[in-house]
Every structure is written in structure tokens, then in C-alpha cells.
Length: 227
Ligand code: G5P
Ligand code: MG
Image (cartoon, rainbow, N blue to C red; front, side, top):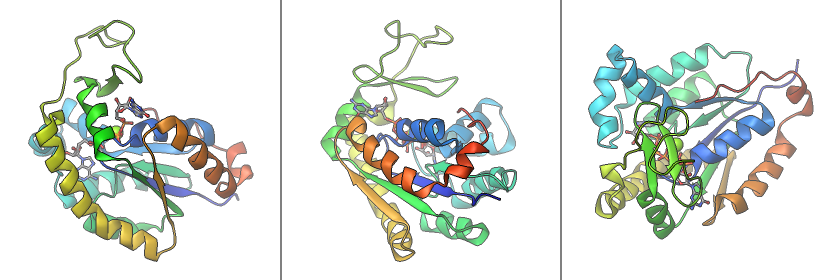
């Protein structure tokens, strides 16, 4: 049986985790699990977890570790025997330890993007609240200005993408991510990528993954879960 490949992508809000994850999932056929997407899905479905996490997600605050870990580990339990990619989980050391208890990651991608770049991207970001689809007026604009490509409904801008709120979020991200990054560094699985442009970072990630993911795996892969 082909060896399974388990990886995670970390980075501050707006660093391109989602954009790069979609490319990895498409090119390498990994199952794609996004913590933000699962949270928004639970909120939209009004599940017990959704009600619990709504106020955190709306304020861009971290959801409590036990809720987040339970949500993600339950999904991962359904994927034994599959290779996967996690986007946005683990984000704290408690989450990393909970994940470590069930499996060891083969590789962790960490994105280092300058603050000014994040600020520009997020101030230009528009969201379709019902689906969580994200647009950027410069990088991936909607077909019709101010409207979601699929539903045609209006797009909104996130209050937490204002510069002062964003600076606080990014500081918080750094503090919380440091022990997680140190843990994966000590395990020898951390790969850090820096830059201001996703399209320039992507070829490096893609060629690194090509050396790590066994080609037999690609033959038998499952279609990725689209968020
Ligand atoms: P999410 O959904 O994980 P964030 O805030 O971590 O949300 P976000 O916003 O999803 O991260 P991203 O995925 O890192 O950002 O980046 P992206 O969406 O690909 O790109 C950002 C924007 O820039 C897009 O508009 C994209 O098109 C554009 N872009 C990308 N590359 C380029 C480029 O090169 N140039 C330009 N010009 N633009 C570009 O989490 C949401 C909430 O859920 C909770 C928290 O409340 C969080 O705030 N949560 C958790 N809580 C606890 N623990 C966890 N593990 C949690 N995970 C989520
Ligand atoms: Mg994202």
C-alpha cells in the first residue's frame, strides 16, 4: 500500500493558506480540510458546535481549543487510510498536541508574509457570507463587482480586516503560533516560505511536495473535498 502523506499549512490571516491549499489539493490529490470552512459550515447549519463558535468566528477570535480539536479530529477519524492537508489547524500548541496524539505530520508548511502585504490584501478582501467564498479585488476579483460568482448575492467586507484590528490579530497569531512552529521544527518537519506574492511562493512549495509525495499515491488518490 502507498505510504500516506499528512501535511498542514500554517500562516497568519490572509497569508494565502486557502489559495495555496486549493492548489496543493488539486495538484497532489490530497483530501483538503480547512478549519475555517468547517467552522463556517457548522455556523450555517446551526449545529450545537456552530452556535458555540459563532461569536468567536465573527470577531476573528480563536475558537476554544477543545471545540476546535474535537471538530477536526472527528473529521480526520473518517479519513483513516487517506492522505490529507490541513489548512488553519493546528493553530495553538494545545491543538498541535491533540493532533500529535492521533498522528504525526510528515510536513508542515509555514507562510511568512510581511505585515504590509497582509494589510493590503485583507483591506481588499470581500466575502460572500453564506458560503465563505473569498475574493480579492486585485488578485481574484468577482466576475460582477460586489456580487458572488455563484449565487449573485452581495459581497461584504469583514470589520476585522480594518488595519488596527488586523495588527492586533497578527500580533496574537505570532504569539500563539511560535510554540507550534518550535514543536514542528524540533520534529524536523517544518518548511518555511517567505514572500509577498503567492504565485512566486507556489512553485517552491509545489516542487518540494513533488519530492515528498510518492507517485504511487497520486495514482490511487481520492478527489479532494472542495470547501
Ligand atoms: P480561517 O478561515 O482559517 P484566517 O483568518 O486564518 O481564516 P484566511 O482569511 O482564510 O485566514 P488565508 O487562507 O491565509 O486567509 O489566505 P487566502 O484566503 O488564501 O488569501 C487571503 C486573500 O488574499 C484572498 O482574498 C486571496 O485571494 C488574496 N491573495 C492570496 N495570495 C495573494 C497574492 O499573492 N497577491 C494578492 N494581491 N492577493 C492574494 O479562520 C477563520 C476564523 O475561524 C476561527 C478563527 O476565529 C478565525 O478567525 N478558526 C480557529 N480558531 C481556533 N483554532 C483554529 N485552528 C481555527 N481555525 C479557524
Ligand atoms: Mg483561509
